[in-house]
Length: 110
Image (cartoon, rainbow, N blue to C red; front, side):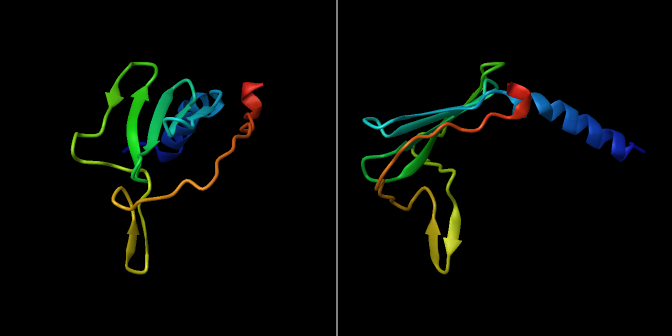
């Protein structure tokens, strides 16, 4: 039988590099495209001309492995329900305002 306390410690220790990697975010206002990464993984999102917030891809920056949405099957990181209304890949959004600010760095990245 596995030792759960040891497994938990190993899991926590193996996650430290991901938390310590310097996060970066960029937004291309003309393309309405967000890129988020932390030197381990990159996530990209688009706000289409029609107002749909869609996942554009996910990349493992260490191996180069990629996940891309299937053509004709839009996906979104947004999915929640309020009463009978779903907010997901099929719900249009309106970008009213945008701004940037520096994300705080974890202590281990200093």
